[in-house]
Length: 159
Image (cartoon, rainbow, N blue to C red; front, side, top):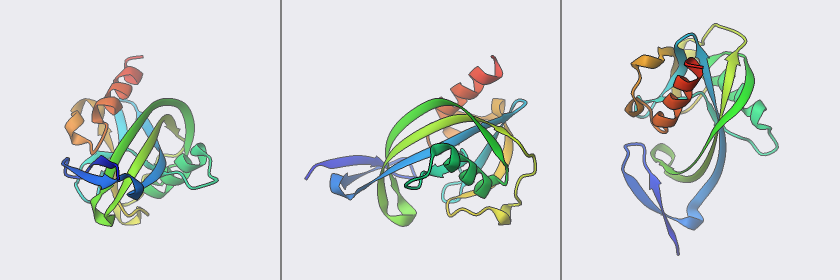
């Protein structure tokens, strides 16, 4: 049986049987305001990640982004340009499940400005929505894809 190397939350890897992988298409919003980006903390590691999440069967990616951003941050958004794609094999330790992740990244604009209070965030993994100064961030501050996220932000800010 073929084995696939999956990245765990702590950055180590775990070998998983190919048959045990769950296909997970996901959409993530890069929402910037001035020189800040909207980020959340992953409850299990404290590292930053973007608002977004898994696409439900029959749900359009733009609808996924609006739903996930609303649940995690309280913001309404306009979904803009597709900007990046990543394919990632990861193991989510809290659920003991392995995923073949297809991550789609979009530049989005906020239509509202009031963020949810921390206790209002409706998500198992995400918490603490905050505007964070882009220049204060390092790729290692992110759970995944910090290099790509910061490159996208810097291009947008300097455009």
